[in-house]
Length: 369
Length: 128
Image (cartoon, rainbow over all chains, first blue to last red; front, side, top):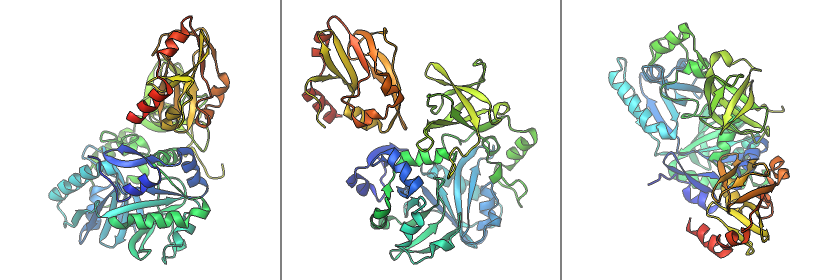
């Protein structure tokens, strides 16, 4: 039995093509992936991301505990500030990536990947059991929150018409608790598309009312409801990692370019620190690079990557598509570090043929490029 | 969707049009293009290739998905639509006229007659 978000009927009413996404019945597209992708790049798009998990850590000791769980340094966060971070296991493998919102001095709102929510919550509870410091309260609130993302250059304008919170006061990766159409909401200037925009967290049952009001408010600006397909191409053009593609339980953050969220010098220990420290000393032998096709072949997850003599296999594709914004095939590849230099020519085996690619700078897509 | 009644169809969502007693044209159905979404890649065989019915003759890819293409009949590829390779998005606009292959076989008509009619295919799609 597939799980449904509060917006399931709304998706069906407007022609969402529903698919099983990690056990959730969600739309892969409505009007068309390309149109939805372009709406986000040029005006705005609306996403139901209520399947994402929400875990609240609060009370005395919550900062220290969050810092023990995650690799980034949560102590630098002001109240209302957000941070991208990673949960690791004791081997330094990535259990999940997440966004941490510091809603109060002792109140941390952790937003995790849908299909990892149960695993993450289990891990956090286990960690809490063995934790030596002051133990905060940890609750899985995933079934209480709906999450809607409104993304694109016109997102602020459209959302502003439904809230008295002054959105221009919220900087990127900050948030405020306010109201949207009189319902309490966490309004965060975060997202997964590379565009300006907001992610709003509201009570589960309020989602249809807010969703429909946003579609109505954005009608003249060309707002489109967007499915998982566009969400994937938008994040891929930015080379944002997706769990199960770029990230998994046996990959160390330093192998996939996440050193910037791994703060080995922060105060106190954190889970996985020893292994990450050791890899930092020995040096990662792997690298996550962006590849651009020099021909027509579209790279897809798990396709093999070869060196320029086509003889040695040096890695594999973690995500790939034909970029709707750039109009050529792009891919992210997990490869031997010695091939990571921008400009390096590599081959991807597409079915039976070798297709030539080049390592390029990322993000693939830049505004006004 | 209306499927042309003079065409025949396969369970793999190709259509065939009988051009003469020994030649058919092949494309993919509107249902196929709609399921795939925005089509961005097409690979077709070279003329001269001998195909058996259900053989893979090429690949079509949308942004999201990869799908093999299957020959509706036994025969020999005598022509491919190379324009479509450079602009495969046209398939989304008009799947039933954007043909991919011309296949020749001495018994093309007999094989063609053995495929699903438009009514049969319509019911088949409904049953999916």
